[in-house]
Structures are given as structure tokens and as C-alpha cells.
Length: 158
Image (cartoon, rainbow, N blue to C red; front, side, top):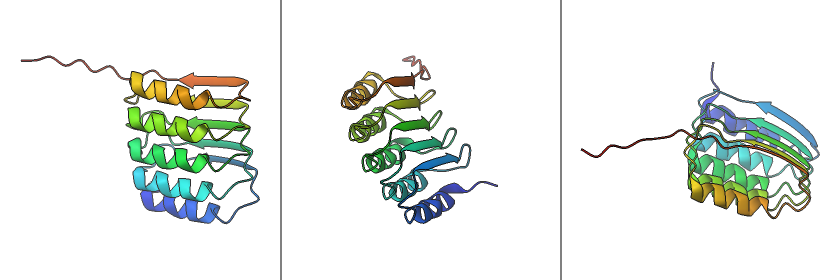
């Protein structure tokens, strides 16, 4: 069974009430979650302002730019995060999504350990630059693991 957008959004609604949560690990890989589900999950996480440790595994879904943007904006509220692991492998994330994620993470000024897996998406130089600009604001970051291997598309004109 797959939880899909509805299940992810419902989970987010439930998490929104857990305002004292400090540690959270969610393994939601390969669950047919799209932009709506990722944004709904993010909306709930935005209320968890006391989170200090978060592991979120959303690899092999289809959240795209819109979904990762929703997550990034939500994480901007989690200013007490010190340890963050995001598995976003193979999610059709492009330049815009990577940049907005960076913008959101820029607010996480207490972040000291970040592991970010963005392999097998569609992020180019613009997205990598936007992500890097955001991370530059994480002045307390002491450990960074960043996976950015992307699919290569070769176009032949006929």
C-alpha cells in the first residue's frame, strides 16, 4: 500500500498538533507522494517549532519543485533544528525547487549537521547556486553531506 498525497497531508495535520516534538524520523520513501502531499506534510512540520532532530526520507516519490518548495518554506519555521537529514533522491526536483529549499534552510541558523540527498533529480547550475546561497547563511553548520549527482540528458537536433 502507498499513502499518497492524502495520507501525507493527513500525517502533516496530525504532526501540526505535536508542538513539543523535538525528535522526528519519517520514512516515507516510494509512497506515491506528490507536491500536494509534500506541502501538506510541510505545513504540519512548520508547527513543530521545537524540532531539533529531523530525518525525512521522501526518496522515490514525485514531489517536484512545488513539493520541495513547500517543505523548504516549512523548514524555515523550524529555527531550533540542529540535525537535519533529507532524502529527496529521485523526485523530479529542478532548479527552482533546490533554490527555494536553500532559501528555507537559510532560516535554520542553529543547524550544525545537514545531510541532503538530491541525487537523480533535474538540478542544474542555477539550482545548485541557489541552494548554496541559502546554506551560506547557516553559520553554525559544522558537518555537511550533500549528494547532487543528476541525470544527464542528451538532446540531439534532427
